[in-house]
Image 1 (tube, rainbow, N blue to C red):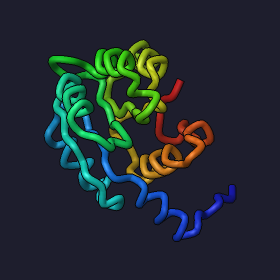
Image 2 (spheres, helix red, strand yellow):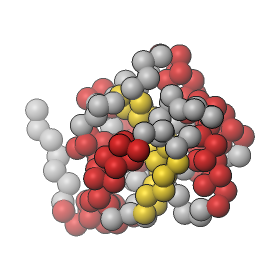
Image 3 (cartoon, rainbow, N blue to C red):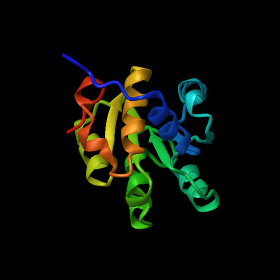
Length: 155
C-alpha cells in the first residue's frame, strides 16, 4: 500500500501551529513521556493530575490547542471532566484525545459522545499519535480522515 508523504515544509508549518497542549493524567511518568513525544512540536505543555486541575487550567490559561486526556484519575475522572468541560463549550473549541489504558468500552463511547475526537489505547506508538495530532491541526479538523484503527480503539 502506498502512503502519501507530506512535504517537509507543510509538516513543519502544521507542527509549528501547535503552541500549547494540556496533558491530563495522574501519572508523573506519563507526563514525562508526553514531554518526549511532544518535543518535536516545541510547544508549551501544561500538566494536570486530574480533571479538576484541568478545568482550572482551562480557565486560567489561554491558547490551549489540544487536550490529551486519561480516563481513570482521582478527584475527577476523564468522563466527568468532559461532562463539565462540555457544559462550558470546551470540547467544541479544543480537540480532546482520550489516551488511556482504561478498557471500559462504555467510558470510551461516553467520552466520544461528549466531544472527544479520538481514543488511543496505552501503550501507543508515538508516530501514530503524531499523525493524529497533525490531522487534528488541519483547518478542516481532519481527524475523520485519520485511520485511527491503526493505533486507536475509536468507536
